[in-house]
Length: 262
Image (cartoon, rainbow, N blue to C red; front, top):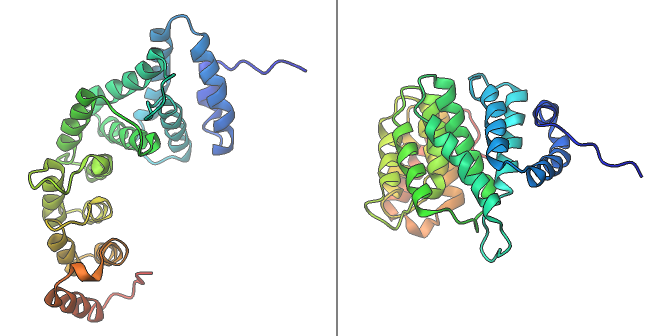
């Protein structure tokens, strides 16, 4: 049997753009390269160097999106999981390295860099899984940086930062900065896509429910639709007062938009 092909880093980043069906094979090949690398810092730097080519492109090109998906899945495969005792220090270090690289890029001059940094952080957190554990200092850095980016002047950057913060919110904490930022954006942000994204991410709770109900009367139909979806999928009717139920029904029944909620 012929030995499996040894991919270079450049070949991996070129081929991962072609389609998601290649990612599993490429992840295995790149992991083997990482394990064989004597200089892990050099591997990390080369990885970041190729990732930069995608991070300077603002337009949502399919090849760029596939590259970032691959990079996030590969890095997340190093995540530390509960009960996983054989995780090597090198493996944990790679994930920390990538987070560090992205967090240093979050406030770059170029809007594309800020957009992609937030997007990658969101993808990493999404790929890590519910049981993954993050170092407290790293958690705090992600927290602070993404809270800064929800104030970015470009809506697309704010959207990605909102999504990245979803797992860091604590609706049981009345002083949670993420919840406070979400509530502000949901009411004040002039961009409807930002408001819609906040609705899709915010955790329904006693302090967030009034704001969610208020979005059923948003000026934009896609935001109103998301508000009704959140209420139908995440909020039990018993959580609403009689007055709130009546208002929701009245708003929905008198809505002139032809958009279907389901």
